[in-house]
Length: 433
Image (cartoon, rainbow, N blue to C red; front, side, top):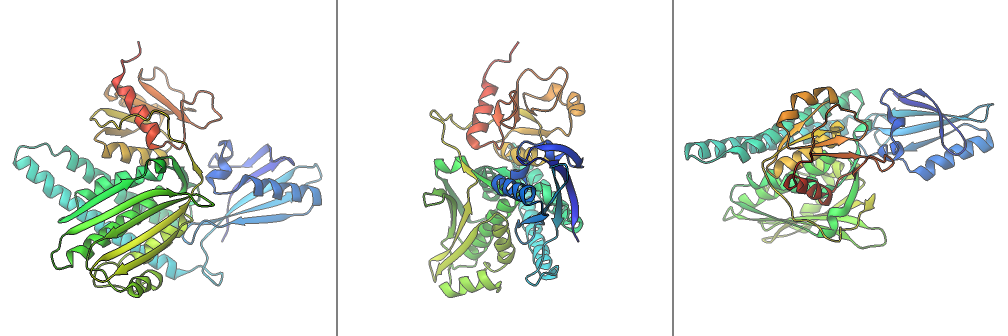
């Protein structure tokens, strides 16, 4: 069943003449087409074809197996404007019918994610208890537990949105290295007996993807947990999981993430059978791989695997880049601290940046609306505020975030690690009078 979410009247050049139906306020965004994963050129060509030929047409944009597709219908009118209606289409199976098998696989993946999250939170609780008993500060462990709870809650919210087919507007443009570094912090305390080494090429910090940041987090999370399980099943039970992230300079630039372990390994054809056919493996690599493969596809990427008996397994991920921002001429040193930072931003962005800042040790407050700011005003050392929000007596130390079209914007979304490092450096500056 298709669900209508947008209806507009536009002219031949694609300019919006009238908003008829837009309950999400989507058309007010300057980049709403990019937000939906729709190419501007394809949209404009469809409008002009409909206008010039005076004939109704439609265009469908796929967004992965587990995300609804977007279908736009263009209808000409006698007054020369084109009526555009947007519909959300639930995921379809290979033969055009809603596929329960994909949903079952997704639920299996979610259950596996929740199990891993609860394992990490339990281990972090054990560490916190040990630190308290020995007189040490358990704040880092408690913050890790809090982020684990937030991720578990996000998974349950995602399941409910899937049931309502309302996940259309959740995808955003985001910097993948923020997800990777935050997930590294989550995993580092949970891989007992296993060393996690992460190397990110500086150029990769400018990479921008489109999709759900949680999808990339779940991919890295599952593959690293699987690798750790495989290592523990080996003779010594100890080893290393290595993660390498870089930008591949090919004809079309892509983000490459390689995750490999030095566990017992297996035959190369066995790891490929597990990856492509979902066969389970006693060494730990089979569980969750079906879900991982779907998540990679949702981000427009591809995944491959290789293995050698006695030398471990390796997974290679590639994702298409929406853009690649140049590195700053004088990048600042990453700043860690315990200051309190408020995020008065759209929910999806607040969750992403909040998790990353929390992994650096900062106390993060996600402020739901300008009306709630008074409850946090005296507690904040820095406020990141969305450019369209208007507040009375905003904190002196604040940064305005938004879209490039807004003249008041100091930093343009999506924020990269370079942006956040520069923003955090303001904590070292004197508070404006």
